[in-house]
Image (cartoon, rainbow, N blue to C red; front, side, top):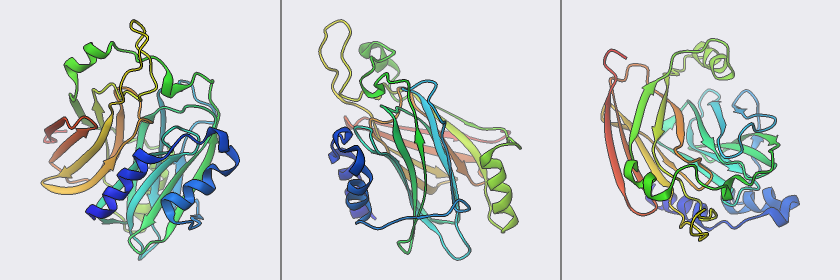
Length: 276
C-alpha cells in the first residue's frame, strides 16, 4: 500500500505540461499511470459530473459517482485533467475496497481539456468516464491568487466539515437509488472546506512580480469513528481554499481529518456528527 501511494505521489509531482502534445496526452497518461491499459467505459459504473463550459476556470466543480458491479470493489479512483500542468489531479485510495464511492472537488481547469475519472478495482480492472470541458481561457493555474500570500498563511489549514442535505434530483442521487436497489450502502455526502492558498508555482505576486513558490494540499486522510476510509492525494489542480465532497457511512457519529501540505505542515481535526 505504501509503495503504491509513493508511486502515485511521484506521478502527481513528476508529470510535465502536455499542452504541446494535445493529440497524445491521454496515450502518454494511460501509459504512465495505468501501464497502457485501456479502461472500460461503462456509464452504469462511473458517472462523471462536469460542466460543458466552466463558469469560473479557477474554481470548477468536478466529480463522479462510482458503483461497482456485483463482486467487484473499488481500490482507487483517479481524476485526470489531460491538459492541466499536473494532469493527475487527485487520487483517492480506499483504506478497504468499496462497492460504491462518490466525490467532487473545486478544481482549476487551465484550458479546454478532456476530464476523466478512472476507477480501479482491487483486481486491477479499470472503469472510466470522460467528458470534454471548455473554458473561458483565463489560464487558471497561473491566475493571480485571490488572497495576499502572507494573509493566507494566517488561516492556513483551518477546516470546516458538514454533512450535506440529501438532494433527490441529481446525478449522484439517482445513482445512489440504483446502488441502494442492489443492496449497496451509499451513506451520506459530506463536505470538507479547507483554508489553503493552493499555490501552483505558476502564479505571480502582483506586488513583487516574483513567482510564488508552489504550496498545495498534498494528502487528506479521512476516517470515520476511528476507522480509516480513504486517503486523497492532491495537486496544483485544486482551487484556492478547496472544497471536497465525499460519501461517509450513514451511521457515522464522528469524522477525523488529517491534512498534510507540500511544505510538511500537518493539520488534524475531529468533527462530531451528533445531532447533525
